[in-house]
Every structure is written in structure tokens, then in C-alpha cells.
Image (cartoon, rainbow, N blue to C red; front, top):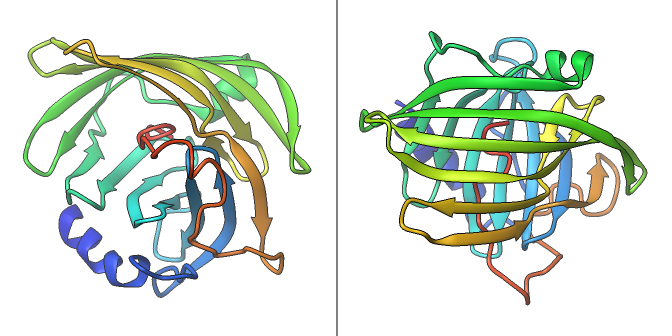
Length: 227
């Protein structure tokens, strides 16, 4: 089902110079990020209250779509290049909670996702508030996170740690500096920090062309994937 939905999204996204959300949806924010990515954040009338979507673009086009709920739970996501989709298992032990993080300063989580091929993954981690910062006029909380993802057999597949940003106004996380290491020993450092927040009526709103770090490195998506 998710793969079919992704296929329906692709014609409006790929190769477009300006992002057009699906019918019944409203684009709220365009975010130019490090790592040569630009993110389009939008909401849809047909979704449960508080849900929101994001589509990430590289210079090659749309590469990743996700939907989160009001608590920033990772409800569904689709790799638009491979077509592989994942969704949250509702019976997970300890879901992520943005309200809990903002209230107490930390949030532990332990949840499962399942792909459209049936692969189940367990994700265990923690978010912690570390301070406040202003980027391009936006007031953001800074966070530190740790995340481990396991196969259904219990094998550790990838371990990630780093920093992110939280917008109380928009009710979501934005990427930051991250280090990851997988089961094969491959390690990766990335920086998906926001540089410009572009609202409706401002130059660059809806632009699908990333502006920053494109001559430095290619994007490694997954940063903020669980938010």
C-alpha cells in the first residue's frame, strides 16, 4: 500500500523546480539544509489532526517521504528511489513522545517498524534537550540523541548518535550532525542541519533545488527519519 502511494506521489515531485503537494494538502515550510538537501513540509486535510509530511530533495530529485504524528512518531516512510516503505507497529512498547521530551527534557523510546516486504526492525534510543539556539530567525531547542536499530533476530544493524533541532512552533525535529556505524563496520559522518527556513511568500518557498554543500558531499538520508 505504501509503495503504491509513493508511486502516486512521484509524478508531482521528480524533476519539478517547484514543489506541489498532493491535492488536499498545504505546503507550510521549505527548509534548505546542509548535505545538499532541501525539505518540503506539508499537511493534508485527510490526515489525523497533528500529522505532517516531509519530502526531501537532492539535485537528482525527490528521494524520501515520511509522515509523522503530533508526537513525532514515525508513522510511515518511503525511500522514493528504491520504493521500499516502512510503517510503525502500533503495539510497540514505548513510542517516541515529543510532548514528553519538552516536558521532562528527555524521552526514551523502544518501537518496531515493518516494511512492505515484511521485514521487522526494532529501534531503541533516547532524545535529550541540551539548550536553545536561533537559526535564520527561528527559535529551536537543541537535542542530543542515541539510536540503535536491530533485526528481528536481535542482531544490531546500525547505531546512530548526534544532535538535532526541535521546533515547538512546527512540532517536529530537524536534522543535525550525526555519526553512524553499521554491522559491517562502515561508519559515516553527516550534517543535515537547517540553514534557511522559508515560509510562504518568501523567495525560495517550494524550491526543490538544494543550495548548500552540493559541491562537498552527497546526501545520506535517514537523518531525522524517525521524526
